[in-house]
Length: 115
Image (cartoon, rainbow, N blue to C red):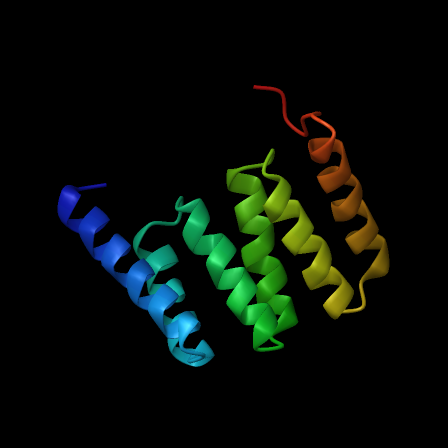
């Protein structure tokens, strides 16, 4: 990705973080969506997007973003924990337990995907 696109992505991400900090969840979601549209491989964008979607009670969309985050960084403890919370919010308990189990493995030093 070019430096200009990286700068644009980072600026939008910062805007999303600011919107989130002041409680403007819809604006934050819009910014994070633009971030992941610009850079589909940006883990932090997907994670933030999923979390704000969950706060907006848009659970199915949140799960999609959470799954993308865990795909990009399968050994990220926070991503699996967040995904588990998203599944619980959507009443998908079996899926939540699976994600929680992966978070537990990571929490004790294990790996989901070997390097």
